[in-house]
Length: 389
Image 1: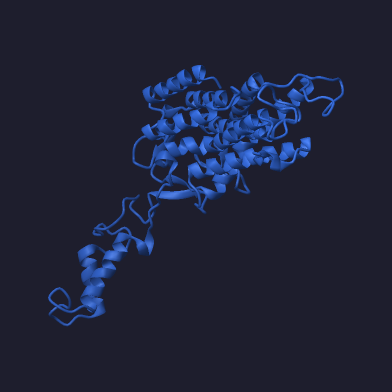
Image 2: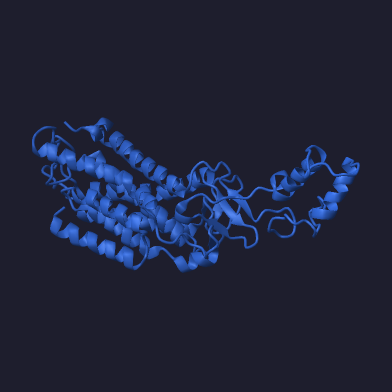
């Protein structure tokens, strides 16, 4: 992309992110590096997709709505706040790598170091480069996921957990929870990205009435329609994949006092307190009991003969009985007045990944999957994505 366009556009992106506080300082740096990686590509497509995704994603983000329906792990109102560098890279690092790799391949083709197969810096041949499919699929999937999560929370119907056999209802904002409105919003996000791609892709024009190479390396109108439909649907499936991954691998924590989902700052995991024998009351009682019955010294064994029953009675009088409703329990955890924790896991009991890791895994899977499907349909070897010399 020409520097005369890329530089002002990047500066405008930085100013908007700073003025709207949509990115942290580290997030802005990551965004600039990502924009640079996209701008080195000779086509306008990768850079334009990045800008469209950023603008559309920030536009549909409803912080005021999320503040009412969810809550922050730090105790503030809901919503994730400014996005961090980790969140920026989770959505764009796959596309950045594919963009740089494709830009290098195009330059190698111009220099005659690798076969062109009809594609060069001038146009996108049919069947096309798999890397281009991966780039579009990445942004279609992450846009669908963003639209689905940010607009789906506005649905009047309760989300249904896709990883549950009974599709039980869950609070808004639960990982793995979907609504019809959210799925439709995801389809819209994917369509916006794919439509932008169709407008900016430098398709090679048909050179023959016979379909396919070696007779024709150009794109007919029907082939463009199929390409648009397939990528739009594929991007929307990315939102659904993210829901399954989140429902299985990412914990969704609910505040038992408000019933709202607790979101970690910057997409991080949310801590859940332990109860029962591991609680502070049990631990403190065990420490004092051990001190009285086993240890020696001034602070150890009492002067008068002591039995276990006497010690238990003294502990009951001092710090409260084991009865969970005893008001004398000085080490009770904040709760409803019983042993119920203030936070519980609603879904994703495995808890292997946080939100950023789920997003990255989804983007990687959808990009590689799209290239794999295109490789099969077009009969283009998958190893061509790594062809550098």
